[in-house]
Image (cartoon, rainbow, N blue to C red):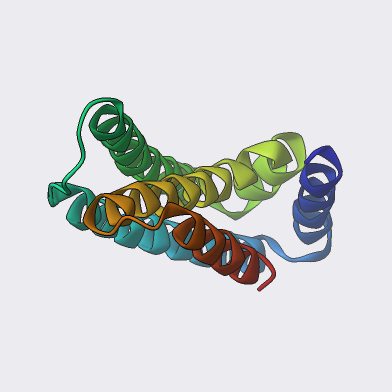
Length: 154
């Protein structure tokens, strides 16, 4: 994970150094709008998928609740973080945004990290939920893992 984070940091550093202030603000605002939209969609979808009560008993029901709520809260954290960063860029203006991008390039990736984490938690919650409706867990696990791997390669 560290090499990927370093690569993402260097991308934001390159953008802040190579673009004009207005272009940098436009690019980062579009990025934050996209992340907040995707994470908001994930929050809504996680709520819908965890609101149905599958036929789970005991510890499975508890784990399903914990994972579902964690996915929902994580998606909301991603949404709020991207909105906060979007507002910070709007307040700082073009020159301040470029300085922010150079000085704090690690902060740009926080909303994306929480969005991916919420997707993984939502997929796990769905996997547990489907296992409650149908009793064939190994095939469900393989479908979710393969689907997550396919989405992760995009």
